[in-house]
Length: 364
Image (cartoon, rainbow, N blue to C red; front, side):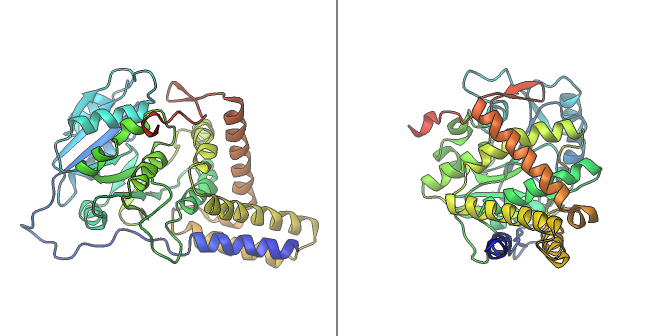
């Protein structure tokens, strides 16, 4: 029976990541073809190390954006100066009002100032390919929300520990099953494209002002309004590097996201993703105790290789030694869940961030 359940869990994981779709190439592109005006909005807090790379990639876009707005959210480094040097318009955000978290507040201020008919929200550590904007515009569902999970560039050893959180985040979106859908259960905050009218119609970031996982909450607003939500992967279009600053940043970042994010997806999808994690753990335990043959370990390693190579540049040991990142994920999730139950905040970019669900005032 244990073997049957393990196989079922591994099959569930395969189903959730069966087809890792990316934005397609637009038809009929070429010189002189008019493109919609796009305002790029970048919320930035102490992003001096990351922001220049994003701005360089934006300068190479074809077609170019109409404007680039960097919202300086109380930075203590050279974020604002580097943004101006990179050609961006800098908006200085006052401290978030009561009930607002920093990122939704910065995104809201950027959206209020944006003049484009579309808005592209980007995290400062994101990089876009030169043809990314055209591909994103061509893929945006009419009246809906498009998000892209960037391809994860992995450099330092500790960054390999983000393997399972990234996999589970993509599984939880329910966007990569064999059946295409425009009703993704989640959105990916590092890269969000939306029409300005549609954004304002659902309340924008003001409607998710207190949400730690504001991207998931925003997708929920679109779905509730009957608007399409499309989630895609970013290979060849968008990339990012998560938590290059060290293990501590990785732990705090995932601690504020994991448990809250799990509560934002549908129950069947959450159960399927949990079944995959449990199946991997069961195989590791079974091989360790001798109740399962080594071939079971190799089968899971092969599945991990197949999954990870499509979402990031993870090194060979992330899949060959898969129980290590799996154990890290379990520890991170348990820490996040414990903080949620105890209503204890985490420190993130110099602020105390509560991981408990915020009241959704705009939905009442």
